[in-house]
Image (cartoon, rainbow, N blue to C red; front, side, top):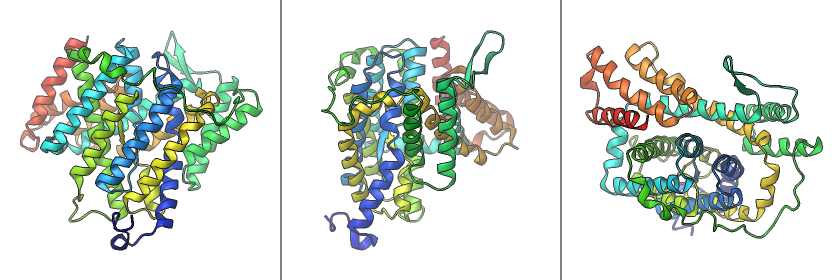
Length: 432
């Protein structure tokens, strides 16, 4: 095992890698409860089945990353992509969740093909960094907006569309408490602050009768039957223009997530060589295969998690770190009864805080360059305002070539962007 993971070359050990794997798991364990909450919210999906699918997709995807790419990077269903799946595709576009899963499956298959042919990296390189950052920040605002809604902090208003909710309501007070606790934990440097914040919020909620007491903590594994293989049942329904736009969005968002996460984690671990990522193809393949596995099990796109940097910070340098994290996700399958204590008030702070973290990329956008500021701003603003990640991406990708052309900077833009511009114009036209 030490030889396979090259412990001596990397200067690491079983103890250090184990601690790193546990640290990574704690930093991203919140997804076990947040993902079922999002995917089952108004979609008709079974929350228990999604919980198992989430844990298994994370475990299998992370094992593939550990054994194939040998990086200390863990995978799980991605935040933002799960919100797009539930709120934009299933609820907003009135597409059955089985068809949406089929779209995730197709995107995963396309991922694999594009990765093996090298096209995936070419497309990633074609999209300007500013738009990548704008997409990440926009998704962050969208996720935070959903969290504010679920908490009852922001509510509907017939006169102004939105207004401040009743902050004295029990669930809303609990969510505000949870947000304060989570912010303090992360500010004080606690690894896994989001996860611990959810635990503390749930406990306080039970004390004040705002959260139901769990009937048990450990149980047998819930059935995967409600979601397993559902993607194949509606596979033929994905070949419509609206679904092609959905699949493209799955592709683009995972492009950004994976590329950014791989570079961030590898850089922190000191694994980059000449500013390039060794075994990048294997890492991208691992991510692609995980999406196919996750869609088959019954969850939205599975992707690499930037929370893996916490494990790297604890000393993780090899795939053994990922192996430890994967084992913990497998063990988590037996704790599904805890789902009933993870209410909207408990998950809302996690959504808001993750949104804050994702919005940090706004600082790297050159706002003083109007031709870049306009498409970036529209991408960020349209996502929460239209309640659609896809629409935000579409608007940004349409305006970017136009503003660059008007500014006379067209030579700086990859021709692929014109193709993407046309695709998204057709997507918006036929969608509405």
